[in-house]
Image (cartoon, rainbow, N blue to C red; front, side):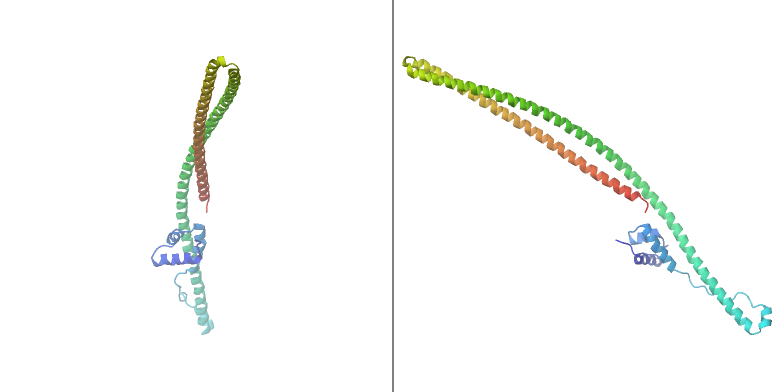
Length: 277
C-alpha cells in the first residue's frame, strides 16, 4: 500500500494525542508499513506546520527621557509602536527557531534510531546471505554428484546397449543358421519321402528316418523359440531397469534445478533488501 502525506499526518497527530514522541520510527510503527525515505519528507512537512504557542510580549525598554522631552506626546506613541513591532518580529523569529530546533532534534533522534535499525537489519541480512551461500554450495555439490552419477549411468547403459546389440546380432546369426538347417532337413525329408514312394521295401526305414528328422526339426524349433523368448524377457527387464534409473536421475536433476532457482531468487531478494533505501 502506498504511503500518503495524509497517512503520516494522521499517525503523527495520533501519537501526539496519545502523549507520545513523534519520530519516523514511531510513525512507521503506527502505520504498520512504509520506508524511512518515504515517511521522512512527509513528517518534515508535518513538523513545519506545527508551531509553539504564540509569544506575546510588551515593550521591555522605557522611552528615553530625551525623546520624551523632544517629542512630547508623539514620541511615546512612536516608541510603543516600534517596540511592539520589534517584539512581534522577535517572537516570530523565536517561533521559527523553536520549530526548526524541534524538527532538527526529532530528525537527529530519528536518524540515530534509523541507523540502529538498519544496522540490525543489515546484520541479519548478512547472516541470512551466508546461510544461503552455504546452501547454494551444498546444492551445487549435490548437483555435480548427480550429474556425474547420471553420466556414469548413461555410459553403463550405452555399454549394455552395445552388448545387447551384439547379442541380438549373434542370436540373429544363430537363428539364420538354424533356419538354414531346418530348410536343409526339410529338403532331405522331401527327398526321403520321394525315395520312400519309389522304394516301398525301405519304407519303414525311411519313415523312421523321416520321423527322426521331424523330431530334430521340432527340437530345433523348440530350442529356438525358448532362446528367443528368454532373450526377449532379459532385454525387456534390462530396458525397464534402464528406464527406471534414468527417470530417477531426471527427477533428481529437476529437483536440484528447482532448489538452485529458489536459492538464486533468495540471494537476489536478499541483495535487493541489502541496498540502502
